[in-house]
Length: 237
Image 1 (tube, rainbow, N blue to C red):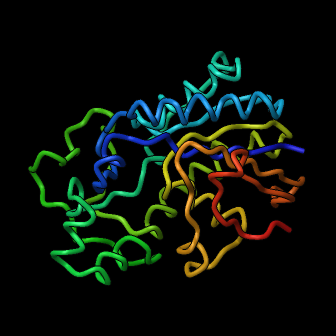
Image 2 (cartoon, one colour):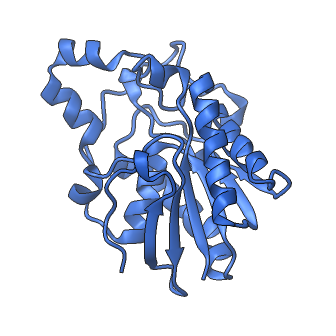
Image 3 (cartoon, helix red, strand yellow):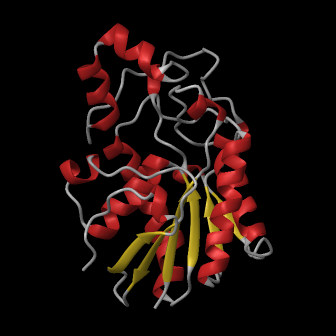
């Protein structure tokens, strides 16, 4: 049976600074690099062998995947990068400190923007330092001005169905190195969760989530390889 490993990038500089990051291309901290290496060591200890890797087009996810694959002697496998695996776009919150934003707008409002399934933050104003419409990574892409988790899922789902799932359906194991919200979107699809249920799911940085799948790509078992840093998971079938 195929195994899908979902790996959220290690700690980034803006994770450390508690800032809304979204599509901004922020690199890993030294701790994030260590988390990525530890992820690869855990994958090696499990004896997991991958046919292909997938990542977003953001440095923190790409480097985490590379470091983890190097640590488990699989850096040589093909890796495909796509913007549809990018983190959720945080709109007008991008770059802001989360605690300061809560003090300004109220904790309940910020919690709604962060944790609800279908309520996006205010849109990002055009022309500012975080406007990525001119970034050549997104040539021909209608770059969003903001996203809810629901909108993140809607742009992640076609890539999951067309690029990733066929490898798993063929019995191959793959690793997806991406972001908290794009990976939550995949978890929602895999486990058939409601919007309310997925809002309660958190994915820790730099901790591989191994999901064993049956022939219909339904989860048979799921667990974080670093049990000490695990978060709650939905029940597998």
